[in-house]
Length: 387
Image 1 (cartoon, rainbow, N blue to C red):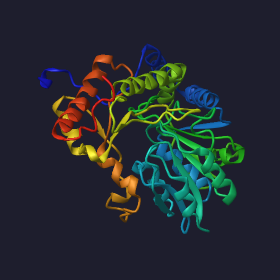
Image 2: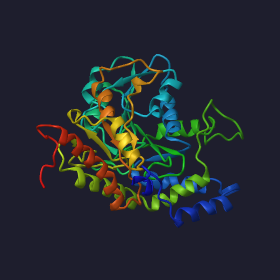
Image 3: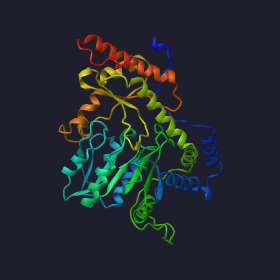
Image 4: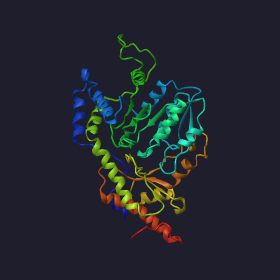
């Protein structure tokens, strides 16, 4: 029967006539003296939204992270702390710069880096702490910033997935020395590909701005004269035009993501043993990727979930594998939660135009799995709490 139902994608962008009009204008007119018009506007709008002093549009979040770490002088012999639960993009720049990534465990409820584990692993070689706000969930920034301050180590926010997330009145990405964002086609705000470097540190901004333009400082009067080896991680004007349109809709885009997570929570919250992205008091979860984690005792594994959703013609993503499970790194199974949670979790579809019926199709898969497991159990621990 599921074969006759249309496929539900896990995510896709929300593009309207506004974005199309801006991109069309950039393609038709954004050349010569106007080749940076939309880029400058996008950077200004994004910084203002975030409450940050400066923003630099980039070709990817990875590029933004690479330049930020390079601007701090991180390289051979240095250590950078990050969560084992991460996409490869967060650690790749560390490796490219010749530094050593130190992979730490996550908290079981937020799925973000464990501050206590951070404190335990600081050494004289530690040069930075990366706080990744996974799936829109927020790291404990109070504790991490305190650790960074006491040890004189910068805290960097990987906010690739956290547009719309707010920690006690401050937007994700605006609290650390610098923050990075992704505008990949899967993200809440998209430019197709692309990213953003943000900081309120004027000196760091100038350094990254120079690096972002092949090492050419903006106060350099000689034409085609780089002052150092830099990078080429620029965003195109056409991509930025899309971003400008998205920024005009940012409140609606992020609100819709939260509505979808709330709908999942309403439908699944009555079941013991299922945890969704946490809604911590005093914070706002940007809800980029609603995720369900199942108690181990339920016997509902990643493979079972993938098969069930595939059978229902629904596209669901796996929870990130721990980076230390990948072939290029040494195993670190002592990161218990980072290794355990992915085996019993799934990312749920959450594109902006999802209907309640489609959300119902997704949750029906989970409800049916829980029911099948419960019927086989004698104590029935995972039945709905109330009728």
